[in-house]
Length: 263
Image (tube, rainbow, N blue to C red; front, top):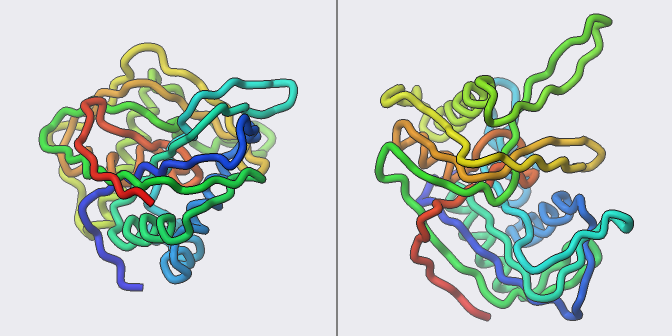
């Protein structure tokens, strides 16, 4: 597949359940990811699932998605969220074919299943947020995660996740953005002005089980400062790691005009 980088698209997928209320497992990232792959064409879905974009032996998928957005209550005993009506979720990518294929696929399918719950797709909303300056206030629509693999005294490995208030968090966020920039442009990332990420308020910790792996991430408003090109990468492909598993989806706090396609 010949990959084209296009204008960043944030797709908001509007879903209507066939029956309410309905329950979704607390740890539903995998099910939502599976629904996204179902909406992609065979060629595009196969490329993103199996191939991705290689960087130093790792495969970057270069898309991200939000949590499910809607009225819900949490039942910890049952391990599920109970939703009472329509829901939406956001998907973004810097890759033109991904956005076009997903929007077209969902509109053609007209329905989607998340876990065991069927929904009709009622609309796809398209926004094109742009980082035009060196400062951008964003809201995390799914937890932002960065981590390092550490070695214990006995030689065993463990994963250390970082809080946004720790210096290592900023270093790893910048390193991750630089990798994405290099993959997309084949160029070294711009260095000025210096990149900063500042949490506004107290970050909320989320602990997510993704296919048996426990991931820690944080949600809040973030002030991003730095080269517009890197801020754009953050909007397009997500902040931090594990974006294609449902982490690091951000939107500008200032609303962006959107076009809506209804079914």
